[in-house]
Length: 331
Image 1 (cartoon, rainbow, N blue to C red):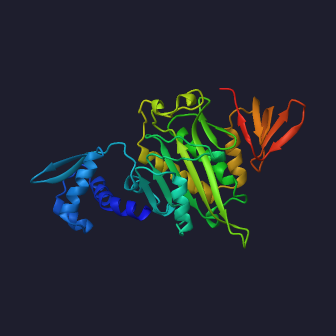
Image 2: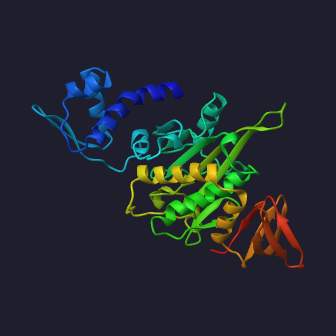
Image 3: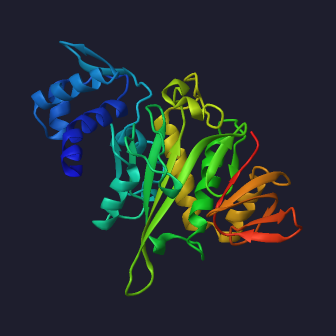
C-alpha cells in the first residue's frame, strides 16, 4: 500500500518541485518532460491533478506552464525544498490520508528506514494518543511521525526524546510570536488549551536489550476548524490559527519543526532539554489532579527533575516524583 502511494505521487511531485523552483517562469511541457525524464502526457496529467488540488498554474500555447501562486498545501517537495541543510533529514513522505502516521512510520522503521525519515498525513482516520486513546485528526492539522535511530541521539536517557519534542514544538510556535506551554508529560497548550499531542513508541531488541528504533508522533491543531472537532473537546482543545490566518505556510512550519527536532536530538543534552522544558511548564505552583492507574489525588506541581519526573506535593505533605501517569489542570 505504501509503495503504491509513493509511485502514484512521484510524477506529480517531480513536476510540482520543478515548477516551484521556477515559480513565475513559463516552462514548456516538452522542457519539463525532458528535464524529468517523463512523457509530455505524464506532465499534462500531473498539471491537471495539481490544479484540482488548488495550485494556480497558468497555461499558454506559446509559453507553457507557469506556477503563479502556491496555496497552503503540505507536500513532500515543498518541505524538502525548504531545508538549508539537506543532511538533516531522511526521506519525506506526505499522504492525503493515513490511518496513523505512527503506524506507517513503524512499518518504515521495521523495513530499515533511515534516521530522520518523516511521515506526514493531511488527515488521520485512526490517530492514537497516550493509553491508546483516539487522536482526532481533521484536515488542517500537521500530523507527523519521525523515525529515530538511537545512535543519532545525544541523550543519555532516550525518554528525553518526548520532552525534547515538546520543547521543539514550543520553539517553532514561539517563532510565530506565540507563547505555548507544556503540560506534563507530552501535551503542548496555548492559552491553557491543548493544541498538540506527542506520542513516542520504541522497539527493543530482546537479545541485546537495546532500543532498535523510536517513532515520534506529533499532532498539531495548526489551522483546524474547531467545527470539525467533537463538541466535547471545545472546552479543552484549541487550534493555533482557527481562522486560517497563519503567517507561515504548513510546508515552512514543517521545515522549521523538523530542523529544530533533528538539531536538538543531535546536539542537546538531557539537562539542556529539561531546563528548557521547565521554563515552559504549565501549572507549576498550581494545584493539579493526578491520575496513576486507579489512583486519583490532588497535589501541587513543584518542579521537574533531571529525569523528567514531575515533583509534586500532596495534601498530606508528602513530596513525590512522578515518572508516569497523567495530570489535569484547571482551564
